[in-house]
Image 1: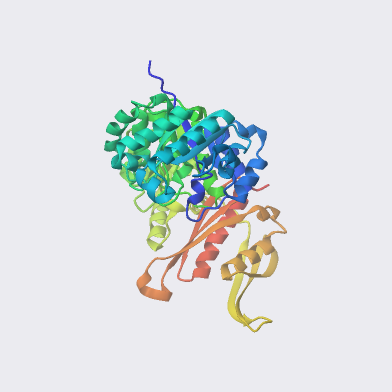
Image 2: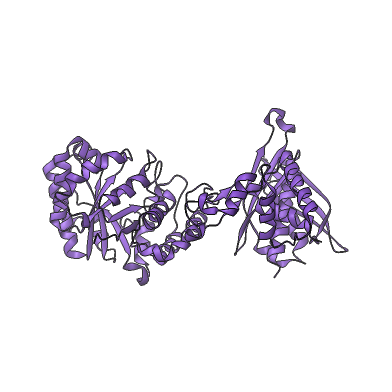
Length: 526
């Protein structure tokens, strides 16, 4: 019987660090290490010892519980040095973990232009390094850099490179598509040659996504017999990124019946994908397959009704298998069944309220015609629902606010911006007044609101505004255009989105801020 076990190798902490705008602290790396080892990733590449101070400190302080799964990345000895005297190679081998992945050149063009050595010298460097490392560590892998380009240029030499590494003691030979230019139909013939010298049980792949084929190439390679797939969570990486392990693992397990350790915790993959983005202070892409917030979102009245009756006809998997959920989007295309479904989700009693439901549907459509878009602001939609159907008691009421923004001279005579907000609110019958400065008018308004409310609602200290976006809805009107403000908020438990629309950006911001504060207080009363 064919063995359908696949090893998953994650390189998020090294390859992912090459993503534009991504930078890992040691705490970030340790937290992600814990997440990945918990879900069942077989190998986690933590970094490159000797390459930078962050990775050096990480390996020096690495908790014992992670060491068995952590891989130290490195490269071959340099020309003119023996393996046992090469500082770079020995920094990797002395990292304290039992597994290493060493990268070497397999494209003769790079051997000549980058290493400036002969083809024969490159083979010697690979053999010496792998052989020495295999005597020092439990497991050694060889990343054949630019293998697919090298094979297309000089197949005989590229094959000789990987055979040399395997003969030297590498347990895994990993074929790398370093510039991401390989297409799926090219793989079969290449693997036919590779498996003549490397057993499929010792073969892995590492694809970049420059042609949007990294996931496809990884899956096809497994179908052709390889046993290890390298990649990153959420497809992080330089340029267009690496093979997205979320998609690879989900497809292999759910569609093709392969076994991976993380199969037992596949229902956590959505939360882990989003948590990694949160650690890196990135907004998760809504349309990511399997784990995106829109991956199982349905929009449109007739379609919604059909989904409710027979979800299997409209969704390729049950969303819960990957920890995601079906989202029946509220929009100006929404049918009555969509609204009813959302109200039931909020546990709002709608029995005998047919006319009110129809009126509410018209209200939603009218709001969207004004510029509201509830498909990305679920919290504002829930509040709109509760204010319509329930005797909803607001936590406070606004009497007035005033925001000023000016430029003033500091002690050095330099012009600097200065923002201040003043608010008057009522909590019950008690009046509260607050004034606050901020980094801009919206920040000042947020501070003033919180200061006025904190005495009655101390839990507001846990509320964080994660993101703030402004969109001009009718740009032809210039500075008098209608604007939509969307605010992403979070606390230690949950995250949510709210929305406000107005011709005045500060007013739109207040509407979204008010919803954010109200939603937090509604959901987390303690």
